[in-house]
Image (cartoon, rainbow, N blue to C red; front, side, top):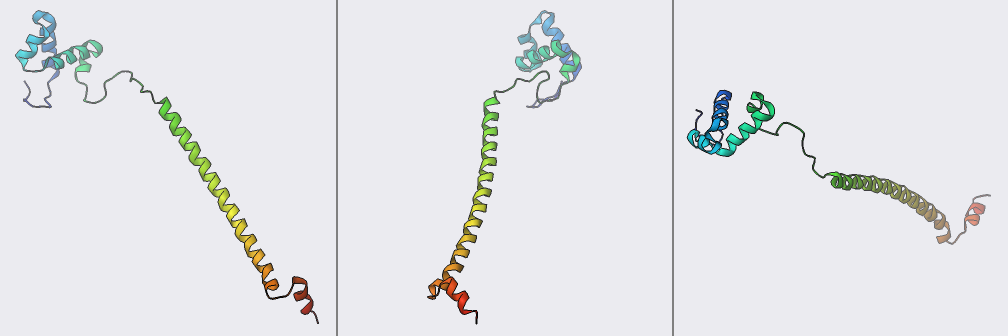
Length: 133
């Protein structure tokens, strides 16, 4: 028998003997008590042996073999895809706003350049006439 503890491992032959005793008429609970294991473990061994044979008894800990039950992620995936689409749209709009800001800055500078001669008391046409001799 394997060492006592939380993560005990049992050889396949040991598991098969326990299964045969339980199904041979002794019953699951008395066999589990005699072996010092929880009856759920013995039920799990029987279930694995019936489903997969001796290979089912050597299964590593982790997800059980067979088809997995799909969680209802469709709504979650829809939310994620909607969020991704919204993020793409936000990025597009930010680029557009950036371009428009550049245009606004350009036109402000051009307007200031046109307003400078007028602020000095000359119109644009007067300043160009005075430069001609």
